[in-house]
Image 1: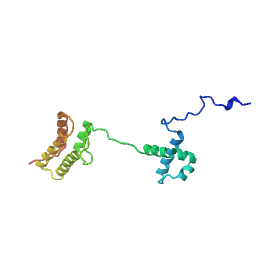
Image 2 (image 1 turned 180 degrees about the vertical axis):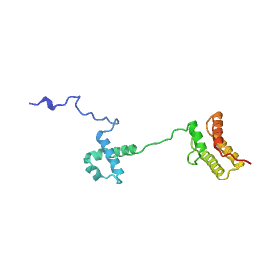
Image 3 (image 1 turned 135 degrees about the vertical axis):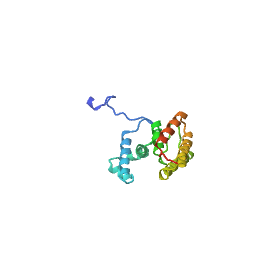
Image 4 (image 1 turned 30 degrees about the vertical axis):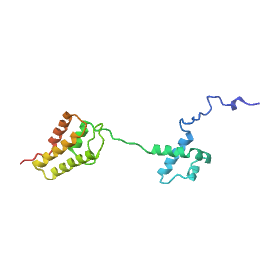
Length: 172
């Protein structure tokens, strides 16, 4: 006679993912093992996965999908947040060629980088050799850069005034 305890009720049966649904748990485990093996400095070979307690059948079935998942989990897309007004002022006060102020809806183009680099160069020259013409040149180049940005004219004036206050005062 069969014992009813040997039969599983529908509630206790393991739920396997459908085709195209979530990944199989062993596939996720294999992806994590692949990430660890890659982080250790080596490649991922069949023998490495066998040593990580995966069967040959699991490796054949999940290898490609687990490799894609491991790559996705290891790759992180990082994007900088757009610069706020305070960030734009700070970057204009202490200009660095590789850190241009980029407010929302601004793409980093070659023309923008060239304009920003011109301002950075003029600002560095002003620090080395302060004279009135150089100070005006800095403000003109900053104004050219700010005119290319999608910001309101009042905001441009705010940035210009804030930067002008930090420029060295030069006498004739």
